[in-house]
Amino acid sequence: MNETVINIEHLKKSFGDKTVLKDINIKVMKGENAVTLGKSGTGKSVTLQCIIGLLPADSGKIEIFGQDISYLSGNEMTELRKRMGFLFQSGALYDSMSVRENLQFPLKRVFKLKQDEMDEAAFNRLKEVGLEDAIDKMPSELSGGMRKRVALARTLILNPEIVLYDEPTTGLDPATSREISELIRDIQKLHNITSMIVTHDMECVKITSDRIYILKDGEYICNGTYDELEKSNDNFIKSFF
Ligand SMILES: Nc1ncnc2c1ncn2[C@@H]1O[C@H](COP(=O)(O)OP(=O)(O)OP(=O)(O)O)[C@@H](O)[C@H]1O
Ligand SMILES: [Mg+2]
Image 1 (cartoon, rainbow, N blue to C red):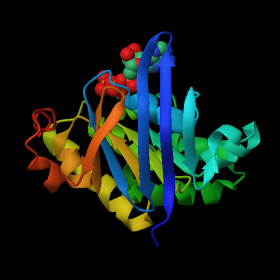
Image 2: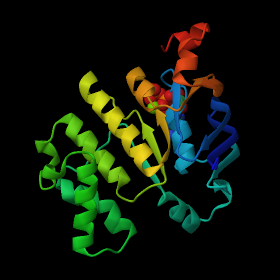
Image 3: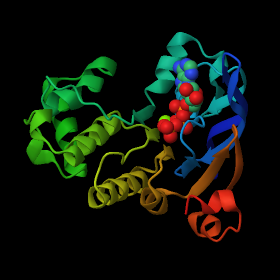
Image 4: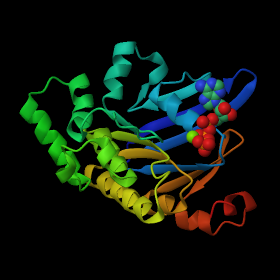
């Protein structure tokens, strides 16, 4: 079905007298991955933070699963967040915790599960990212690409229906970036996850995007598939491809 999962209308966000988001409009359908392309400092991360509710919007509407988040109570927002996963740019793991403990941390916080249920969840998620052998390693024993995989597994452990990714491949070499991008795409399709990705990595865009949104001066100036936008004659759009 063509169910809208994320619907943003006329989102506006300023810091002091600096308007970052002027008029953001986007609809993301169930199972779709919407990628945002925009220059550095133009409000891509701010957009994601407004969607999660980490930053309050100044005006406009953010609807997730048909619920306008500005009308939700603290408890309702907490319930909604359980259905959403975030992979932040740093993808930071807790250095003093093993891979197993890192994965189980969100489970302990949100659900009351028995240890063997948590072990099974951690193992299954690590298997999905190809790292089940690393379950008892410490983050310091892992490469950058492995850490990203573990962070991805941790994001997915609560079975989110929506995942927001902020620069999921930064700091990785091209081959590892490609692997992570393919993993994101495969897991996305497997679980029919709805997602938004913010990235500068054009190969990640090519691999993962169903639709690309171009952000300029606080608005999405156009959107299209990779193949459509790649052929654009617009100089601004061309600068990304
Ligand atoms: N909490 C905040 N308080 C004040 N200003 C902020 C805050 N968060 C972001 N900004 C400002 O908003 C603008 C957009 O920031 P944002 O982090 O969204 O950019 P971005 O598009 O994600 O850039 P990059 O590609 O470099 O990650 C910047 O000018 C930034 O300084
Ligand atoms: Mg950013």
